[in-house]
Length: 390
Image (cartoon, rainbow, N blue to C red; front, top):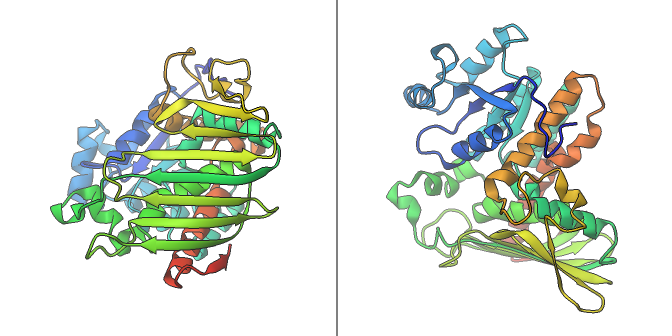
């Protein structure tokens, strides 16, 4: 297994990217994250739905002409035809949501490992088909719920799941942004345009874009399973086709309760993802915009700051690259998802059992749960906030 502090100088894995060309934010983030540990090399791409823009984007990024593709179908066909030792080892898919399913399923069925942006697909039916394809092919499949890659999220999960704060009673998670407080999509801004378009984003706007991150964070840290939920889903900006705000009450198996809020119309908020977990013996609190520590409050009420360099940093050690006191943040967290997937690919290639490595990155099962969460929240909201089974 690759150490968090001593990356083995092995041959880099080759990867191709679908989406992420000119004017795309998240594609550049994925490429930076994949490159951080020098374990992966970007060698091929179909970077746009427009053949002309795809080729131009590839040239911008220095792709060789014979691996700069006009479409993902062309990339799949030509990479599959290359000798095994020369073709890409995995594909990174960073397209708008509606393209995720056909691309991911095609590459999985062709035997390529996949790293896919969230939400995984548009429906539970697509999620079931994709999960079946992954199970049949045996490929490594990662979904980039990147906030679970933060070292202190891993440490918080270790603390909560080990019983340090006792049985979980109450969870509060929120993810608030302000960038869609006005009708930005009418300006032609690319990120706003597709995220507010039902044809490309799916049935949800804010809930699918950031609400699913909040749900995944709760699951990763607490291990709690949602039993039912009740949602108030709103579109505040007049004329917008999808939701831009939601408040969700959660009931978990075992009796714990939760409150999840997500909004993209909160002026002044940037990426305000926060989590608080209250148990029978204490509590923890973490903020994404200040990610290198969390607050642990034990039964006696004496708050303490848990840092990456503290004595209890075991669970965060593998996800840490810098010495204590040097902040690690968004790109590093994203890179941990890639590193986990790469470690699993290497283990599989070496004939090793890579099942345990799945804990290092969100899998197709986590992606399927995220899709189900989106569907249930929207269902409850459309029915006027009734409780629905998860």
